[in-house]
Length: 303
Image (cartoon, rainbow, N blue to C red; front, side, top):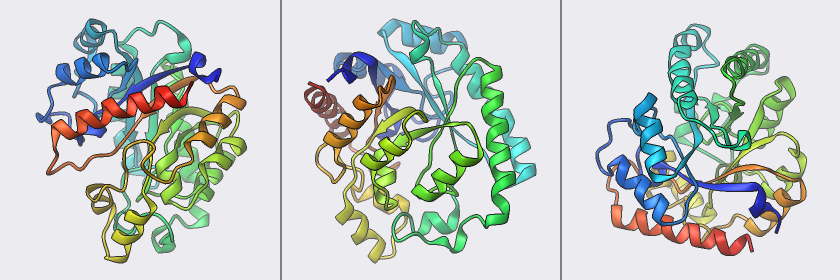
């Protein structure tokens, strides 16, 4: 498979349930050392500041030979005033990303733009979609214009962004991602697990979004767990805690089809392995073992 020659593989702090920059469960140097030991090429930043910023971030990555794949920045696109206030955090993320030299422009950090959680949709994530809290059709033009503004702000700093649809947010379903792509020129972050649980088909999405995929999050998902949690009235945090995002190859994502499709369209860039872990009640030994196993699984799948 030629894909292995055009991609690099990254891990992510979210795989260990790290969602706050001051999380102390796993020291960032220990996380990077584990990634290097397990054969990862890079890392998603996680919450900005967890891995450090400026020279501290660049030095920490250089010491372990780990590249920076990018990182998550959510902005309130549906709220004009909130969006304006949130640009400060976007600029802080861009400061962090531009402080890290990229040895190859194809693997420069990707600012991963997304929405914050929508409470109504966080409570009932995925399929069948709860559209009572969805953006009304009349709100989409201004919403998309703010996404475009954020994308252009990233490009002004020399970085090419991607947009990450996500369970429990204003851009959750495949149709909503399609609508955003129609209204903007931003690339999409193909997250296989979130797409599957929102009722989408990751293999078909690779074909349809060919030329618009700027980054890939390889994430498996267990449809039975999701269905059970939804039926019991659980929200997104409950899906994560129940193991809705499982180890690669243990769930329902057709990774053979996804990887073959990415190979066919000539995808070049980061493959970020993600397996969302809960913020509470984490088992560090297990999450480290899972990420070691995930890397080995993907290495075999790419042969």
